[in-house]
Amino acid sequence: MSLTTQRAASADAPDADRAATPAPWWRWLFVLPGLGAALYGVYGLLTAGSRVPLDSWLTWFVGSALLHDLVIAPSWIGLGWLAARVLPPAARPAIVVGAAVAGFLALVALPFVLGVGADPENPSFLPREYGRNLLLVDAGVLVLAAVWAAVATVRSRSSAVAEDAC
Amino acid sequence: MSTLDRLLGARLPSPPDALRRGPFREGAFPSPLHSERRAARVGLWLGLAFTVCFVTGLISHLIQQPPGWFSWPASPAWLYRVTQGVHVATGLAAIPLLLVKLWTVYPKLFEWPPAGSVSRVVSRLSVLVLVGACAMQLLTGLINLAEWYPWTFFFTTTHYWTGWLAIGAVAVHVGAKAPEIRRGLARRGTSGAVAGLTSAQAADRAVANVAAENQSVSRRTFVLAAGLGVGAVTLTTVGQSLSPLGAVSVLSPRVPGVGPQGLPVRQTAVHARVTDVGADYRLVVEGPNRLELTLGDLAAFPQRTERLPITCVEGWSASATWTGVRLGDLLEAAGLPRDTEVTVESLQERGLYRQSTVAPPHAGSPRTLLATRLNGSPLDPDHGYPVRLIAPNRPGVMQTKWVTKVAPV
Image 1 (cartoon, helix red, strand yellow):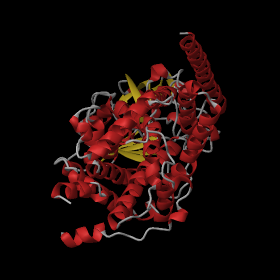
Image 2 (cartoon, rainbow over the protein chains, first blue to last red):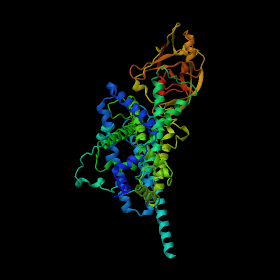
Image 3 (cartoon, rainbow over the protein chains, first blue to last red):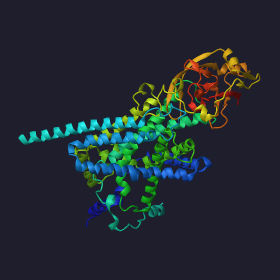
Image 4 (cartoon, chains in turn brown, red):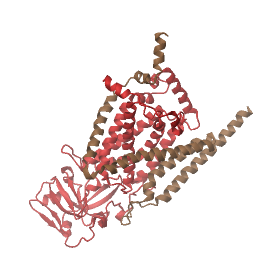
């Protein structure tokens, strides 16, 4: 085996790519201040005493990540799996965009829809009917997406027919 | 250093391959949009959003708890309205961005082996800190806007310190991923887009890039979903700060113009337990010439009218027309210089915000009033009857309501 082939073989080993990637000099402008800021934050949290009970903080810190990893992301991926089986390819972009927008709006509006913090003494807070508004907006978004999906599907079929005719 | 390298690079035992099921399987996430390029590009927007949130949040913190070197001006009157409105609007816009970003990198959660080396364990734990801090900031920030507190920590303290952790973790992440980010942001087809890759890897990326353009859910679909998501969230909520869009923002927790006397309220008189202000009310101004004023005495001072916004730390804001006595006029009558730093105390007996400090720029501003009227009628109890402070360019929590005492610091 010649030297060059040996080198080529070692470049295929997983750790060799990492060594081959030159780290830009500016990474330290992010890493060092970033470490400083993060440590300052940890110091602040640890010394805040009764204002930041660490059990409650940790619950929300880890819980927020798990809410995404175990609930939101799997739900979305499950919907995508379903869409890939049920929808014709031409309809998928419209439905993906519509479902994403409707989903984002639902997530952001959910605390207002639940209205746990509402105060009967303060009618200026949460003055709208958030459940109804969210339903109307999301219905509008999904109807638009369905129309777009239908038009795209019809167009793709007719262009397929036209190609067949040629 | 080589000892450290050996330690970090040490291979850890892999779990048996029989456990490699479900999302751990090779190719479990087939979309070519789970890519370095998409992660870098959404990450750029998300990083900008977190930077804006951090800077505006820091400004709000410094105004409320100013260190000696910090001074916040009284003019322009709308500045805090903009910074805090931007803080909350950017935080809400970052929710779809974070979800899109996490989607692009979600397959990495199921990498196999789950912990191949010591350095991978360290790296994955640092990603947990990054995701935990960023997700917590956005989630608790959103829930706080709904004035719902399903936790035992004090929100503002926690949000402040976790903000340092989040921006630090973002910066470290940018530095740690610098080669990937540089590739991901480089134009497709240039040498920068494949810098550091072997030719086989570069060829794989090129195939994936073509697939990302041509498959039905394409790169364009991805960008459209992210962009429209951010736009929709912003449009349906930003009217709470950007009054002209008040009617469009059908999901905003506040509506400019809705509230007693056409202005939203954060803390009610009932909640503050200041509902029985009687004829024995006095406004005390401490100074060489101490004043103890009835409402009638206060009305004898020159009355000024100012159009000033009230801006809540929760991001909503609305302009109103306030009438009352200039703070500077009262300080002068009490024998103090007009720009004396003072504390303003409320009749409210408990609560963190029952008193505020008025720094010299605001004390001396001709637009700072002890207001007795709002939009043409006497203050509603929820707006601070009989007297409230209203100063330009300050957070609402520092616009003390039900004022009974002004004293030099």
